[in-house]
Length: 249
Image (cartoon, rainbow, N blue to C red; front, side, top):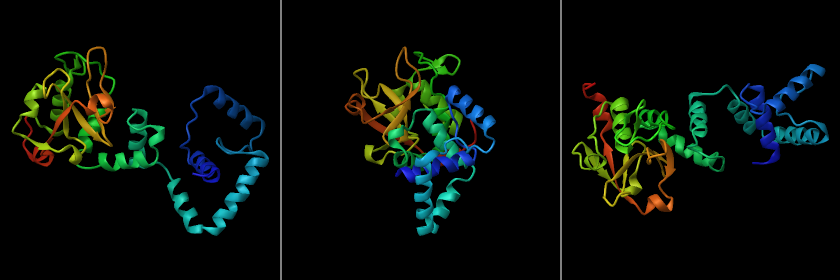
């Protein structure tokens, strides 16, 4: 993205009230400047000779491509539900700055399928501590306690308690790694047993899980060497059937 388009985007985000300045000192400086000069430009505006140059370049670009300008203007409207999900994923560390915008958009497209409720529910538990044998927010989770809790709470499907039992459950179908979709269970050999660890696939090669003692629920990349060589399979639930079935809770 060019300096021109980046600056324009910041200006329009600021004008829409969507630019959040996290540094208190900077915010105070902006407030003081606004007091001295009521006509001061909104935060994020580049001023001075360089700013004037950028504005002139942007004016020329807008004149040459009015259609593109219209699209950019519409993108600066108040945040949509999709924008909220984007921010939620970024705040939780599910996407990184290096993945924006292409990686984030691909991940969001995946998350917004039939498993979106399940995946987003799982992400609400990021940071909950790991507890061996745990199956609740209050007591903490172990890996299978976490997946069991999420599936029961989100789609009403009660999974077996242990990771190996979940992998062998008749209610779940085996899935190849290249066919993974958000909401699938992914299994790993972390204790010299084929299905000794389980997590929930969230898209873009990442999964959410309760890792180990001393840690907490978090998102990791299955493509990292540690997880890649320990991956042992995946399972998929019929989420549509689970949603249509009478609640067991």
